[in-house]
Amino acid sequence: MEKCPIEICHQIFRAACVDGGKTGIALSQVSRYVNQMSREVKYHSVTVIGLDQIMMFAKVLKDLPPKYRVVRHLFLSSMPQKTSPDDDITPTLNQEIGQVGAEKHYEGVCDAFSLILELSAPTLFSFYLVSRIPRTVNMLPVSLPMLMELTIHGPFPAVSKAELREHTYPSLQRLTFVGFSDHPLDLFEDIAFQAPNLTHLSFFPSQPSRHLHEDLCSALNIPTMSDKHAVQEVPAVGTLPASIVRVEVQPGPRPQDKKGSRRRSVLMDKVQEVMRARVLFMQRRDKRVKYIEPGPVPSYCDAKLLWLQERANWGDDS
Image 1: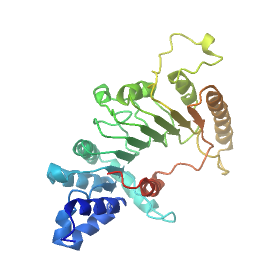
Image 2 (image 1 turned 90 degrees about the horizontal axis):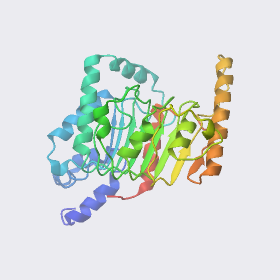
Image 3 (image 1 turned 30 degrees about the vertical axis):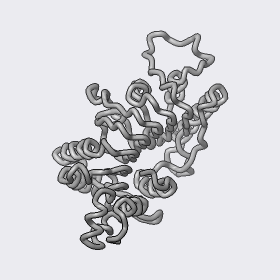
Image 4 (image 1 turned 180 degrees about the vertical axis):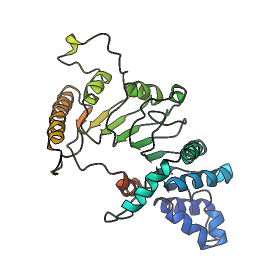
């Protein structure tokens, strides 16, 4: 290994470090030489899971010299994650949710989260965020100039802070929202301003939405039969960037046959059918729109497995 050129070693290490950090940790333990040689690439792909790890990784990045602070692909979750599809993480999940209740801990995690993004910003290409902790902004609280792909799994904030909506992602091409029950009116306005070069936009809500298809129709400038009856006082939702080439919409998850609240199930089925019809209408009117059939209920705790599968298919992207 000592005879191998540094550039070749970095290519080998970079190709190996796609498993969320396991290989990076292993490289540190091989030998002193390998530990030093891999310092620039061992954080190429990182998973940070749980509130304690968020705090810890922020400190790790802060203590690193900028030369070694190279994070390309980041998965960050406030929720515990399965390591295999059969894992039962219910006890860990309940414990983690309890920690969020402590205000001091919450503020510390929020500060650590922002610090991680700030320190990763110069090199970060893709980011997958999983969190039930309420965000303070529709997207992210930090500008990320290199970010090309962003997935946010969790609810939108009730109110977003105006000063945090000025952050931009000029390189962002793919944006996906998962596991939300409702969306803010200013979402499309924020997307247009913050991600002006976006090409792919996807929505996978945790339940059928009453308004997403209508706002999206307006944001894409797709004319509808009801336009002539529109009330002028209704605020505009903003227009999506002209760079958009594909918009995927799933009208909520697949209906589940469960005993219990049958009335709610019937209501949700009706809302889903209306949403399905509207999205299919949009698809006929605009080739950029793609209707996605309802699938399994999005799970917070399965996100890491899905992310690792996607990462394995990407190959070496430096």
